[in-house]
Length: 162
Figure 1 (cartoon, helix red, strand yellow):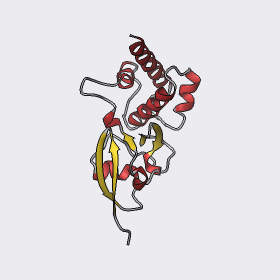
Figure 2 (cartoon, one colour):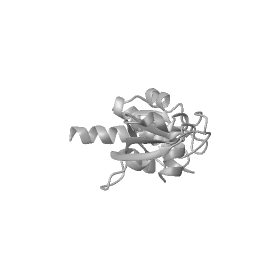
Figure 3 (cartoon, one colour):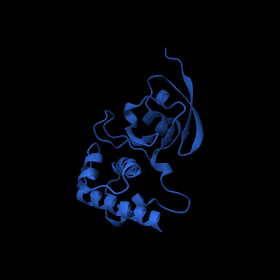
Figure 4 (cartoon, helix red, strand yellow):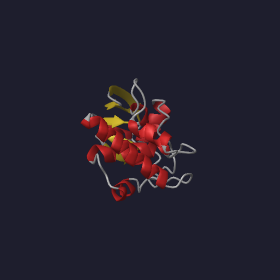
């Protein structure tokens, strides 16, 4: 029988402690223990990207990360993207470009795009498509999604220069 362990981490900028079993994934803990259901479960084997979160600013499939592995690190989920002042430019751009339909893939796409824009605030279309290659969307196709990321990059770039 596996022994549960307390994990201390920061999720969306807040200190969080949770109890988990060694076999539990970060996705399971987020959704089932912490009631953070914005991160979606898709394939559960790292092929679809629906469960993408940021760990130390890098996009990871939370279904492939053991919850114990986030001890002492920063985790950001889709719940941490918007602020009390409003939506993040990526979220605004996804709405403006109609880059979403069923919503299962959208949180993961936004998190992957956010990781890209952290590392590269002015990506080319090719760089955007490469960064989102691990996220599958079966509803919209990718052109609207790519336009949304380009639009968000322009919004954040404009905000940085103003």
